[in-house]
Length: 74
Image (cartoon, rainbow, N blue to C red):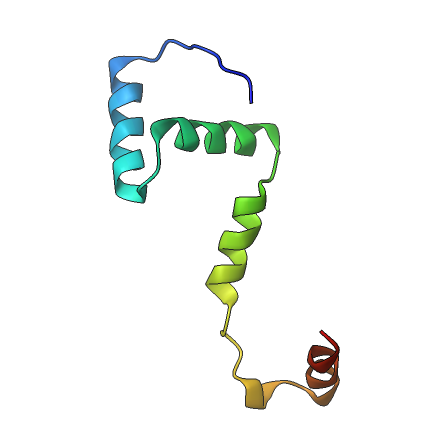
């Protein structure tokens, strides 16, 4: 990472701080996430978050035989 400095309006700063508090992250992390999104850069954390959201969403009994077979190979 490269350390940098930016100027924010009071409103931008307060909203970033509030959002960071709600999400349990630093405001720098929140800001980097928005920059990544605006620049089209996906993060590994986004991938992990997406996996967490869908993990266990398909009951094992409903999986097709080919999917079950593939899982045994993993």
